[in-house]
Amino acid sequence: MMKNEQFLRISRLLGESAISSLHTKTVTVVGLGAVGGMALESLVRSGVGKVRIVDFDTIGITNLNRQILATYDTLGSEKTHAAKERVKVINPSCDVEVLPLFVNNESVHRIFEGKETDLVIDAIDSLSPKVALLAYAYNANVPVISSMGAALRRDPFLVRKADLMDTWGCPLAKQVRYRLKRKGVGRGIDVIFSAEEIRFTYKDPSEEEHADFNERISSTGRRRNVLGSLPTVTAIFGQHLAHLALTKLLGEAELTGVEVFNARR
Image (cartoon, rainbow, N blue to C red; front, top):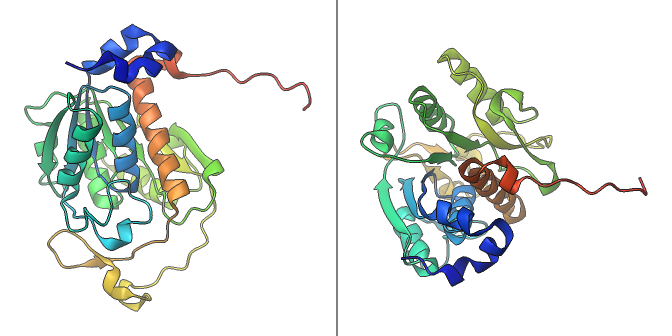
């Protein structure tokens, strides 16, 4: 039983029926890094009744600058374990299902088979796993929203929401669009993305300064670049993603505001 007092400020804004509805919802969060961890945090604090959390990774020292799950106490912990513990200290009544999983074309079905979910949140930061998840959800008619690239961005005021097919200025979104179109995926996936021009020169991971900190990809031993990122940007991505999720769960009318006319413009 959830304590209604914990969600009093939300019920005062959205009404008791909104909170009661959120208590019945299940949200699956895939990817528990800077964006996914922040989205999970806000959904739990908003009263979502059950979360399913999916990630294969452990918390490393380079995560400390931006990931809400990362502290010196959680270094080396599985992200799913740290996330479950954090959820439980925020809302002990929230049901948590953990799936330590590296997502690819062969494993993605495990997220969906025999599992009911009201919404899937894609916060994966790698291209191929992201495409695998989005394509599977789309073809299975499971509601899904997604975060595009948050790394290498400096300006949180350039973060936007759009259908994936309408995004611009994001190299990751461009690649995701291209691959999904080849799989027959069309419109209907709302995403959070940045329209900021990227100022970055790619280097081979072995040539980067402090190359030993470049992250391994699953168990293959391959490394990828640790891309520069700011907590002020990744947190905004996560919060936008969480708010988009709440909008999908409760409806546009509940959570869409109207800007006041500015007569001084």
